[in-house]
Image (cartoon, rainbow, N blue to C red; front, side):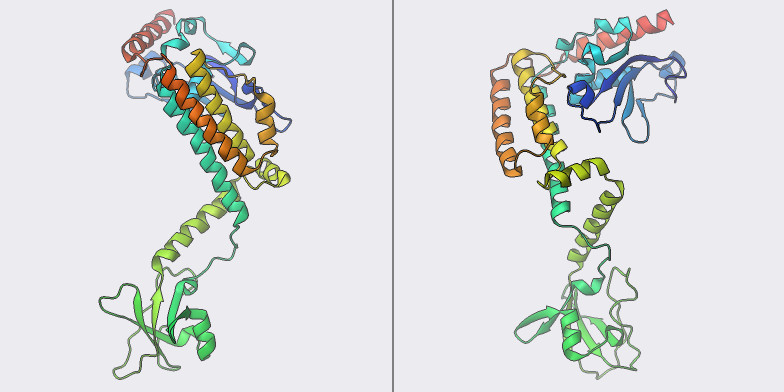
Length: 349
């Protein structure tokens, strides 16, 4: 659905770093807005809650979805409603009837706080990927196999080296009642199937063992460990393929090995939540701009930021405990407002 082609945009704003006053020369220009569906589509079967471009830096919410997200104190949507005048590209006069105070409640402690913690998690995830890069060459199941040896166990590769065995001439049989434990047999020319079929095999290969053959060892296949490795391998190389190179280079340049932009947003969200509790308003344009830009530039150690974030979270919780904001927004009033504004639009069209 092309909202602009149908002339349905009722709110359009510059969002993100440029609205926060945190833009740098490499910052993109994000756009968020609200559109109104044609009456026939809204009352019919073709309701579209939101539309976006492939990179999600341009997003438009249908008016009903916009009001719904405001009612649950979604941080992105509260910011959109409170966009500074200089960042508003278009706003229909009917939207002036929406008073931000109708939506603010103590629920913001959870929504902004949860969003802030998700940014810490993302920063941690990037730190783990940078500190522990994964080889492009994918491990096979052989790297997760172990064989009993003397009083303990050795990796299968070590065992094969010691015995001068080739995995292609090995044969395996299941050991009853012993999960992921196999009897290992060896013999060239015996027609054994080997331990794996190919490098992409996700399980060991069994063989038919002639009666009377001597078992040379027990083999353990750490199947759970291999499954975990495969998930981490895919996640890592998907990240490499899709990562934002500018942000990645920035992370490498400051040398702290965490995503500083995620950590910056952690503090932005926590401070905004505190302001909501104390001032009953959403301050999109950041007065703590320099502190946030210093975080983005990597001027703080990761451990230092985690400690500061914990302190800021406690401050946020105390601020909401002392606040006289309602526990929840008044959904009845919000519903009446949404209905009234939509009817005004449809009557005016």
